Image 1 (cartoon, rainbow, N blue to C red):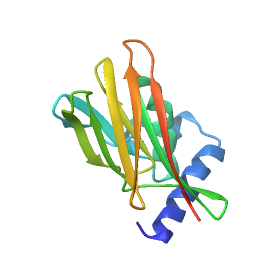
Image 2 (cartoon, rainbow, N blue to C red):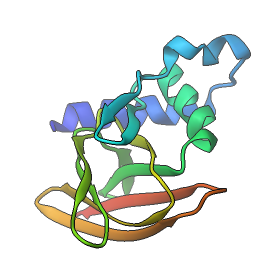
Image 3 (cartoon, helix red, strand yellow):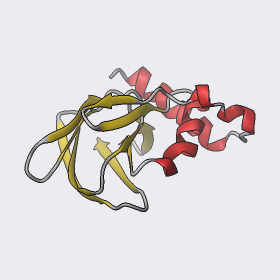
Length: 145
């Protein structure tokens, strides 16, 4: 992803964090469309302040939230275009996609999963257990000198 797109994404999400929202800001049409891959329903996005706010308000409805960001020269920036793979411990891939923004929300069945995300040629892995009630949030952050 270009530095310009990364910076634009960072500014957009930051604006979503600081902009006072009203119910009209969180229209359902601001939320990216859910996609289906196998048995997993997911959505990804967060570019544009309306979409970022809509995603933040929808997080509690999804068992897993992923967030992608980088720190470069001491400044945090949110990322889009992150390759993501989620698989069960036996190795079967249940989701493989490219994030459309700094957030990815997934409807996973209860169980244990390994989540992998790559950026700047560096792979990060996290293990997560999804429970019937509750949500998990994983933040993937890459530091760039």
